[in-house]
Length: 425
Image (cartoon, rainbow, N blue to C red; front, top):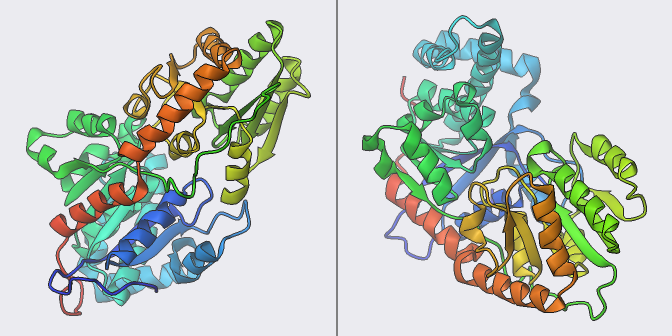
């Protein structure tokens, strides 16, 4: 495991584990950036991932190194999981029983939920055992869904503190499955990437827990995502949408808006970068709308290839129905692209309408088409919004500056390293 010697030896940094759903992942590069940045600040961090690394794109050298140093929970297989579970039952029965009790929280008598609770319980025992062997004394979990179900059970079983980073919005939609209130109230502290997210957690939890709910925004490297040179002739206008092809991203609304623009006589070129379960349905929609030859799907691309596509674009569009604050939008803004998105969740914290981007109501095909048309017909508007967009990122969404907030919260709430020892029985 790679780590960097702390500059100030008098301020001991915590030794902790990061638990992620999939690491590394092409759609979640901020995981790698965050962990690398914290290690450079002296933190000792080891990583565990429920699922194996994303294989959609070739791995970079940094991602390959992450794969080689990450504990992959599901790789244990049935035999490995059974071995760990039986060892816990016979040598650490209290760990086993605490984990089982935590897993059954909120399941009631629903057989489907009990079955999933069993799977989470077994995975949690694997995580707890890994942390014990690595002498890791705090667990930090990204996302509030299934991965944090595993993390919460592991922490309760081993009697170790845990913390969360909540991105949203999916966690806020299925509170029964996510047990979000219980997780937040039991966590040592919780980080939200937006004020919107913090407000949602305050809505769910008792006021006595609010002081442990903090905001630490994500960010981008504005040197890596440098300002592009606008094209001198933007006909047809090149639009790009980056994100998983899922219903939440609103890509069908964008296709319908593109159909309206084509009907109004506009020449356009729309590229979707990403993959997902809606790929076939969206491709079919393109044909139905008569947009063949104007709309293209690249599938997942490497980070370098995505930046290249953004550098050639005129407009970035993300018509989501719900978001946290999407990093893809920050990246496009950093590259000085005119951006169109929606008035939903955390996005208005990033974009001020008609100042550093355009916002439309989520799901409104006509409003989206009108906003895009204003950019199609005015290079001056595209230029003004693009310049302001980059300035917005430079002022509030720089990766290094925002990561310092996360580091400060970890130092504040997570205990410094102690001598090696056994987990609490």
